Length: 263
Image (cartoon, rainbow, N blue to C red):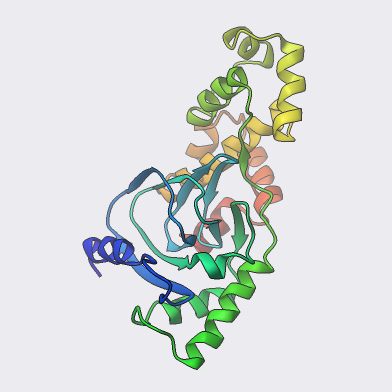
């Protein structure tokens, strides 16, 4: 499937009146990176991948989404996305009416085998009034979204403008090894205030937040085909074993196993 076909399908998958089905699902691939600027739409959206890696940003923070996860965006929530290189993915648009009982905050969820197979089947449907058997499968998809547990591994953003400036700089360059004290000077804030507000506004200590930013960047670099040793050194780890151990503790698998299973 060409990339233009997928983009055309995304453009067509919109709910224009009350006669639309509860959901519209499309699938396709892109041969290069794609970015979508801040936007919103009246429908809910669940976006996932079969291969590749995706970053999504909302008012809550930034998620890096591998193939085992999908991101749910409720209706009218502003969001932006970026793929890291080529990808093969799917998108489910849920009508405003059907979205009413689903989570009202953005979240990343685990894509269960049942959810993935149901969505891929729905991607084969024409955009029209659904038959009874299709409506039954639709209910399974909506139930899976509704009953999902939000993934806790994401990068929450602080709301204080001084902290945001520091967080954005670190998210863009997580290997930056400046100390908490040095970042406080750079951000024109006291060390004590920086430490206290970071915990209060993100739920993470400054050190834990930076560690998470590095691990999420590691996913991006793995997707780009970089070697584990290279990634560990680029992200500021002194030894590769420490990086592998932390990666496994956070994601449940080693970087090599993650690469084999997701990319």
